[in-house]
Length: 170
Image (cartoon, rainbow, N blue to C red; front, side):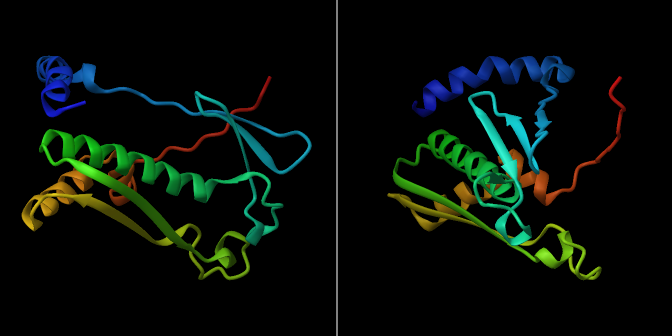
């Protein structure tokens, strides 16, 4: 897809969202079933079934997906797609690109070993390795706009309002 096609594809959506702002609000959903036999959750990804379990550092077998890894994978996927879309819109041809995310977890927190240890990532590093003919200013703009428009990055960066509830099955 080139910049012209991307703009043509997005133009009617942008026009609609300007005219009807509420039409731009979409609720995304994910669901999963708790496994009856093991400490795992079967998540429907829309393309396949992903089975998430405990990370080996918290007693898991390593056979199931770790939700921390899945979070980083979602960040890589979103950042990669956003980078490519922004590069396309800015007409920066990318010969090659790689996105890497890594995050630091202290499992003492999630296992309750140390109440002072954080539960969750204490740091996440997102790296783009790109091969493109563009000057430093264009690359800086590419990075700035990728950060601005990457949904997963912004969600992690700006804590959303959260609501947690439990409902008893009938």
